[in-house]
Length: 378
Image 1 (cartoon, rainbow, N blue to C red):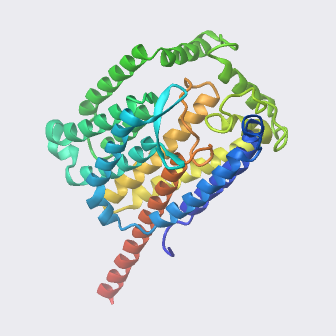
Image 2: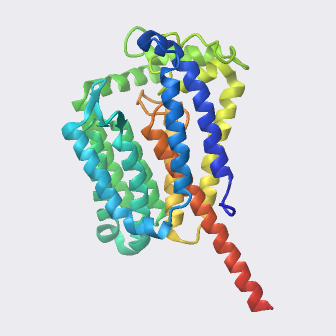
């Protein structure tokens, strides 16, 4: 714990602290009207945060060599949970994405996306796609990645499947896969997206709303464009300094999912441009420090693991912010560390702990190299 990049612990905790404050502010009215308890969502998020801090600290102690060996078994367990969701999952808002474990609910997609990064890092270390070619080097990991994305699509959860596929694609590129070879999975992924849109009308409605807003300047403010309209009103009314913490208006049941998917909109309304920029800086610093750790890692597994985890956090944040500002269709993805939710927070805390563990290993190896060098030159 003495050698790692402590910013990789400080930044996630700061973002989680911001999330706690904003979850209470954005959900108090909803909790009061739905459960007669203004702190209903906040108290649950506090419990999840405590559990998340424990997960983060445990992840900083993980032996990366053992994690590499266990990666196939971890992936098998995640795939089994995703398959179980398709059979006996809990449905909410038209999607079956949760497993109930006693009084708790678990979203296996968040476990799957974390474990997939670990598995790909281990696989690509031993079987570099740049050396083995398309058939032996690229097809096997693509097939496994496609299987997991397919299980996520069954829920249906197109946005999570797409981001998992994109993160895997970037890891393959970083591992040395050739660009002409990567064009094939890109085409296959686009075809899968088209099929998903054609078979799920509500997804197509979201895309049409987005296209109409971006290219036509039209928005169905009483129908499919309601969320985006209310989100833009919240962000625009915040001004430079915001209305003040707790003084936002759109959380009064005007903006649906204000404490989850659109929590950034409430933050921008209450803390203004300055607060929103501060949040973006914290997220950007975390992604940058993670990629910096990946660039300094000497072990290919550690390097790909850190890169994959950092890119995944960055992609989720980018898409969430794009949705809130109308730059992407509505997806339902949370803002990492900030949005209300348990599984996503625990997965992101585990990712932060692993990033810290890689950074600690990097500094330990650098210290040992310096020590050997000083002995040889003495």
